[in-house]
Length: 341
Image (cartoon, rainbow, N blue to C red; front, side, top):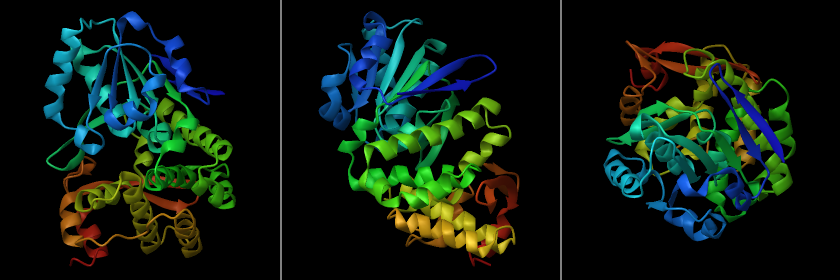
C-alpha cells in the first residue's frame, strides 16, 4: 500500500493506493456518512460498501447534470445530514464529480471522501479537488474546487472494467507521462502489453506515478492559476471531440494529445521524432490518434471551452517529453491550423 500526500496551504490529505475497498469502512463514521454511487458500481462492488444510506445515480456522463442535484439535496435532508456529515463518492469520474459538487454546496460545504473505481478516476478525476457538471453538452462548465478528506484507490477494482474503460484511463495516463520529466514515458513504452492487459502490479505502480505527478502540481497550484494548467494537456481539443462524438473521455484525450503534439511540431516547438514517439505509445496502448468529426463544429465547441481568454484560448503545448507549458493561442491561429481559413 502507498500513501501519497496532497499538501495544500490550508490543509493536506492522503491518496491511499493499494488497500481493499472493503477496508474503507474503518475510515468513516457510519452514523454520519452518506454514499453516492451509480447503478453499475453498486451492482459490482456494493457488497464492499459500508452500511450507510446510499444514493444511486445513473451511470456515466448523463449523471453530471444540474437537474439531478435537487433530488440529492432532498435525500440528504431527509436522512438528517448536517454540516458535520461526510459524503463518500464511490464510482468513476462522473460519481466523483457529482459527489464533490454536492459536498461543496450542501450547507455550504460538508465532508467529502472519494473511492474511485475506474482507472481514469483513480489517476485524475478523484485527485486534486476539481469537480464539474456538464451544461448544454459542454464539459465541466459548472463546478467548484473542493478538496476531499481522503481518496481511496483500490487497483483490484479495475479488473471489472471493460477494455474500453481501461483504455480510457490509459489515455489520461499518457498525459502524465508526457508531463513527467522522470522517465514515466519510457517506462510506459516498456510496459504497453502489461498495461493493456490490466496487470495489477504494473497498473498499481503507474497509478502511483500518476498521482504523485498530480500531487506535486496541485500542491503548488490548487486553483489552476498557473502551473496546474498543464494538466489540461490534450483536453482542449479532446473536450471538443468528446462533444462531437460518443467516444469516452480518455479516448478523446488521446486524440487531443496527438493534436497538441502535432500543433507543437507546427509551431516548431517539438521535434518530429518526439511526436512520432507520442503517437507510437498511444497506438501501442490501443488508443485512437484521430476521430472522424466535423472540424468546424469541433472548433466552434472549442471556442466555448472554459479555458478561453479574450480572443484566444489557453492551450497546453509540448517542447519535449517532460517539458510542457500553457500558452494563450489566438483562435484565428487554431482555425488556420485546422484548415478552416
